[in-house]
Amino acid sequence: MLRVGFGMVVLIVGIAVYAFVVSALDPIPEVRLATASYSSPSQANAILTASGYVVAQRKAAVASKATGRLEYLGVVEGDQVTRNQILARIENTDIQAQLDQARATLALNEAELDDATRSLERARQLMEKGLIPQAEYDAADARYRRVLASIAVAKAAVVGAEVALENTLIRAPFDGTVLTKNADVGEMVAPMAASIGSRSAVVTIADMSSLEVETDVSESNIDRIKPDQPCEIVLDAYPSHRYQGSVSKIVPTADRAKATVMVKVRFRSYDSKVLPEMSAKVHFLARPASNEEQASQPVLTVPVSAVAERNGARVVYLVRDDVAVEQPVQTGRSLGAQVEILSGIPAGTRVIATLSDDIRDGIKVTVK
Image (tube, rainbow, N blue to C red; front, side, top):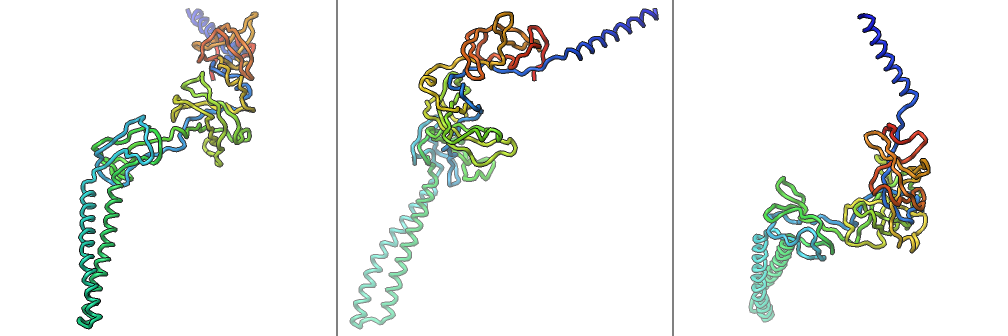
């Protein structure tokens, strides 16, 4: 019995050693994956591709200059607004009352000015005839000057009340579109949102004619980017649609944390499908796309290195449960480092990016 048990232990150890040796001699290959995506012929001359976001260059969080309760809000998300249009209003009955009082005080002082002017003129005539002393004339002149000063003070009070009343109106600083509504009627608003229960920005608006793509380019590649360099922009939301553009600005500072430099890319033209904060890919081109390239439709592509010939057929390899699965495909024309896929896989399929003789159907792989 002891001999049988000892033999079993030896057998198990031998199997383990054999498995270890086999795995050491034939390690599981590591692979990277690439995604089958749409590319255009003009992207064949792209020297660099970077990801970024659509950003409105004119954007404002519109806030109130006064503190109070919001009593009127005249816009919602998506509304078009014009410069100086009243977007919202905070309660202003107390400010209106102050303005009315200031105007009434001004009217009272202006009425007193008429009497003071006539009194001064009578005193001047009487003094010239020697009928009143100089002191009486001086008193009339002093009263006249006090009334003038009171009018100036009253006018200043009217202007101050008018400014305070205007500050309760929240106006659009430029023509644009309402992106977000940050406060509702009944809420307290304040210029700096000093309290927890108050809001600063009432609405956020953007000038939709100022959209550009902001993308981060590695410091090591920034020398390949030039002002006005032609570009092709592809929104992640619409991968089959392309927009022509060019480099508008290379921001003259680097992000030390990411070791990148921001590059802004303007659209040559765009439609209503382009929205702020959409993600996009920018292909920086070596030359402007020709009219034929712009008119051509994007085609499904994978990297050239992802396609191999096996048994007379063109194939790519998918990864399922850490196993390479061979998938025959029909290829078309080459587009730089990409090759057109006519059939075999749909867009979005993940394939092994670089094939070698070690990659074959059914082999176990490790995805990096």
